[in-house]
Image (cartoon, rainbow, N blue to C red; front, side):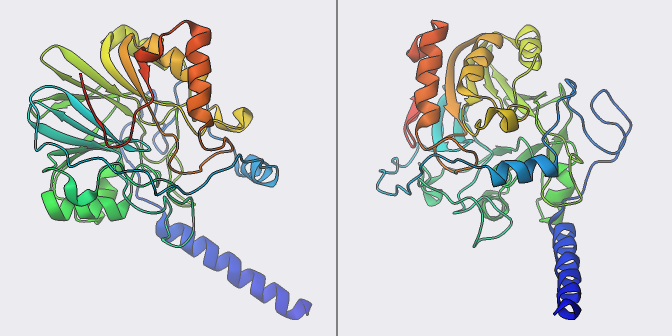
Length: 341
């Protein structure tokens, strides 16, 4: 028996390493900066995602709250073709349709059933997208915050490229992956750099990590974005843990008119806090960036952490009450319903 176990184990290890290599994304190459050491990107706070050992510890001790697949939710009506004034529709997870100055912009679009390298395993969608993909208007631009599977979804990216071939605005290193997919027009931005497409888009710092396989950890950048037009500002925070970076953002580019802030995938705190904001911290971000109105995201769609379905929303309401912030200043959005600002 031992004679067969060792070769079988070696075959499994070789297969796992080969698969990890195949699904790994290409990385960035360039000069060292305050957040790039020549090989990998860093959080300026020194914060890091947990190690493989700690991941295994979390998995072994998981105590996930209940989730139920709910496809009885009514999907929103077909969006308008464009808008001069600011119109934002929550699709779900971190996907928004932002319509402004007659431009249509998607953030971290995912219409897939799973956020995974595989279609048959991985975190499954528990709620339908708030907009049918076929009902989307012509898409002019796509903002990608980082390359994790729930934020850079290849099947959706390919659909968008085939139908509209928009400009993709991505953090450093991500363009090489999009080039491999045949994306025609991608613009890479480092933190604090900007581009203009009728709306100014500036890349902003976040506290997170990146990687799609076993050999590309932190080889591409993660970011949030500021959209600015006509003296108004919209902040899309991407995916981030809490840190002083939000006070820096508030000081440099605040106040903002609308902030799209993650509130989910935060339990257990010991494991998730370096990379994901809790509802209590989301209220702090709202205050740090001096947001007039904030909108929650990154909740209720994919069971990524240990909080149960609906807990992020409940904890946000409690956090707003504790901080003395009116609920109308921090919206829990309804999927598929356009919000005019």
